[in-house]
Length: 331
Image (cartoon, rainbow, N blue to C red; front, top):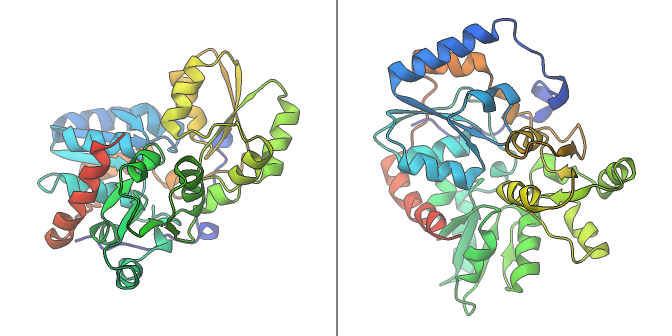
């Protein structure tokens, strides 16, 4: 089993501005190698919306955690290359114990996932007999194994609405997503005090600065963002969107320009799926160093060596599978 590795502190990782990523001189050769190895290995490449543009470009599927989990659940490939972070590769391994799941760089952790442990959930259950636990998919396999339901930002509201209201409920680990769920459902619940370091750092002042520069732009705000509560207090009718919700909104909105209030990689996905419109990152510093660790070079190397491989111990996998399957069935 590949053990969970706590995320490397962001200061120790190479910080990349999405708009200033260096172009590898041998990119064409890397692409050709990846294509050849993909065929030889019968591999599928799944890339998260926050990945580098060149990595998104070579992926078979690009999406959010929920969409990629669904792709992992139904793939016929023998090898899954997960261009994302560790918990995503673990989810793919939980759904596909017979397949080879690769994470091109094992340093690709998650600051949000690292805020919650399986023991913390067990402690909560001891204080709340009969309670239910809903955990964001941004958690380790050990945490999922202690959970009743998993969710993503795209279906968190639906998951919570589906649960009985007469039992204690813990929602973990993202406090900003929990605030969004509370606003939408009114459901009483305990909230874990965790957050994504990138989303938490996006300030209302960043949004206001982008709005001054683009006064006609529509806001696309992710519910994980630390700025969301203060902005909604001022503009209560404003909607929050998961990354897939941002795609749908941009496609149907009459607006021509959008301020994208999430990790900068989402701009790449929006530009590809909604051509002809303009997408402005709310802040060039809203960049996840962990997501940017995946490169064409280490995707090629992982396919060539079938390493680094992510596996989950069977006892943990079986218990973690149920909350993931419940997540996939809702929303």
